[in-house]
View 1 (spheres, helix red, strand yellow):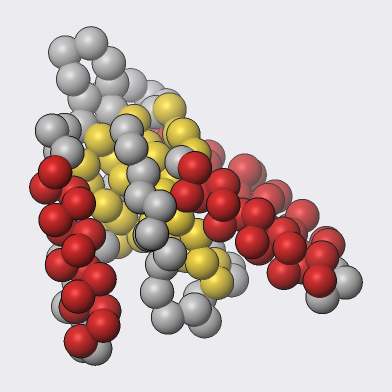
View 2 (view 1 turned 90 degrees about the vertical axis):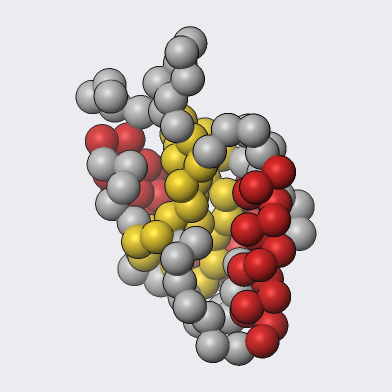
Length: 134
């Protein structure tokens, strides 16, 4: 495994960031969004580039609500549809939680990390309606 892995953003992750930016702008505190970006770039990406297994496993969790169980089952089905195995993990930030996928290495490239979704820690679930495509 190389010393530093590549971290990519998905369209879903970018959409989540736009929603967060709008929330902070609507609440007249754009610095809240700037603080999030600083933590993402300076801490999260830096850590994941070197330690991709740092976050806790997302796919092996045991949700208690029926809704969460259904969403996890849907995510398992989406993950199974991809030809390339990926490990879905959560990175807990100060006020947010990032869902990311680590794609296994292939014969032609090293592993890649995809930032899939981000949510405030008080939100009930991740928005995965527009799933990622490696």
